[in-house]
Length: 373
Image (cartoon, rainbow, N blue to C red; front, side, top):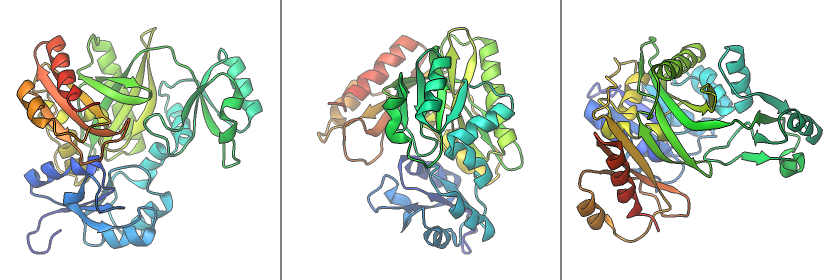
């Protein structure tokens, strides 16, 4: 707590776009936001108060001095650093015990299986021989994941032979092998939970992927039955409660061709599939995350419009195309992350909303197209 103003202080480890998008709701809620970044020019530069290495307990403990709670822009802070924070008496949300299941995909699969959650068939494979056996039992193709560090399609390969991931068998531990799910579409269910146990949930959304990267999100997911909605909510709330998640949780789901839901991935932070909530919901995922980690009452999650569509801007351009985009699509909301353009890089997103889904999709795509080469 700021000793002069009495304002709560939230410390965010990581200076990326998620930390950047926490700045406006922190200002609106009257909170103070501090950010630990590796470099001065990161997305959340406006709130960066310390440069340091998130893998260094010394740097992180120094940053944590004087804050009321530590939270995260990413899930890569090592467990030993998280435990050092705990031992020093710092409030950390989500906790080290919860984050473990977002950091390690094998542990996540094991725990979700123990909880009876619906997941793809999987196995830990230690060798090419183990993987060949798994492939033989699952139609000759499988998804292979490195347990730690993968995101946006990195650390994931679809293979037909074990030799295609021979370079991943390094002796550092097993890989995660999963059945290649025959899915109709990918969904995402977001829920927020505060330490006292209160939960808030948004409508389930459809997440459209290209090469393992999210390109569009439609909220709510079209053609979703009442049963599908109820099952998605049950899965997300059960996981949040059983794992003791505090803050935001995104549960990425496969909707299979035989109308089942399977848990694909977990993210314990604001998530790309929830960016639509900034403009499309009564309470954005970023405001809700701040409320939750401070154990404040959670906000309403009702959509503002029948449909919201978020389109990521990938790659970007150095040309100033804002005037043309703003003139062409004046009802669209534009969000950019202060990142240098690079092929495939998420440099921003746009959100359109309205009553006619076809029109909303058209406007969001048209706006994003101005910024992509």
